[in-house]
Length: 567
Image (cartoon, rainbow, N blue to C red; front, side, top):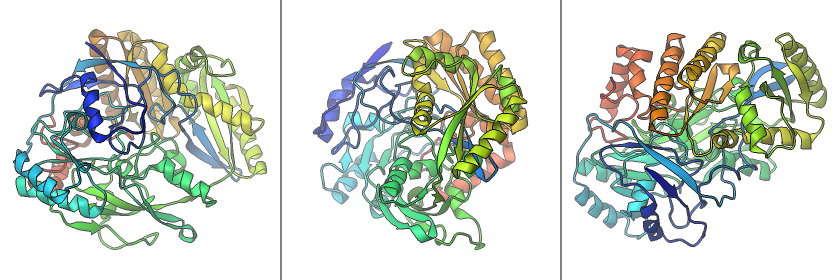
């Protein structure tokens, strides 16, 4: 069954207008289903932060970013860039998107059941403003979805649009009173079914209005902000204020700080700057399942005081606490430019220990028609250099000589800023080019990561599986840190079954190579079944023990990450 979903363009919609959109959505039932709305879907409320229609991807030329740093040489930081299929932002869209709805396994596990009627009465009494507490069917559905996920979420029972940490505390205490589950929402850009309600229903705590940058400490190179601030808005604000600092974690555009922390994100800067699990998050303000508010540590750059509780909540996906504020380290902004080189095949490119876009992605870019150039249809590396002019030139010469040893040809350093931006724009369009490569198809995105030396084996095995199963799957890889994504395209249920088989093989192969099934997208419901294989019973049991200790009633985002339903 195919549905066409159209979003509203008007800036004057009321919260109740989302009822109109309900006729575009399939009814959600206990049988969870899979959806790929490409490329964008956001809830509708008043005032809407962003309103646009979904599209078949032809109008996405002017946004997105993807950079990953691999080495430092000759005094300049060298970035190896690739196409990030999540790395997108809202264009001016008008076309409609055909969305294929296909079955997927429902959530199961020990899910709490509570008195939603009483909870709703208390919430409405606590928040009497009509726009704060919603039972509108369109919102209940929309806030259970992600713009990028291959999984459709079950709708929530209630949505509460909170405006402060104190509001979150009030909701949590009511949820505890009536044993009602809570699922946090901030940016809606996750990939692994992280936002779905449990089958028993839930209160969705919408944190998107917690979007204030509280304090910028330029001399300390840090910033205090709320969980709903997006990383790109933060960096744009710093730039507008003339502050030569930026926050280097760069997952999909419009990902929020709270969501980035909760999924343990990284992005294309990870090789140089690390991930959310590194030292970029100095502290967090968290509402615990009991309703207590804690701050994990002070603002000092380092501390040896006790357990590192900040990291306990990074990657926990809202199952242990709801992050409402954070203090973030910032990095200096450096001058930069880009370069590209082609390789004869994937193995030569990955052996060069840089980032990769395979020949199929390049072919899709050429076919897409938005580029001013015709790219050689070969495996291509996108580099980004940072530093002074002399350092960039020296580093570029070093890199050119190094990659030639691995069979690279057509090495090109951008001659000026405009050419640099044009090259980078083509890389930004790669996701949309790949989605348009087979009209009417949907895409399933993988996220495996292995030790860098094993990446050529993993990509070669994946390509062999795709060929054997007759699947079309453009590949982009953060080769510098062993992470790659395949966008596996499918047109119908028969192909989807093959996609599931291919994805399962890739995930198991990554684990076999001492890697992980998810390098940066998180677990959610989509990757739960691989946890025991990857981590072992003892590690998963300890994760469950921590969950049980902090959340004895299993109210916070039940069924996600280390759920007892994992097999």
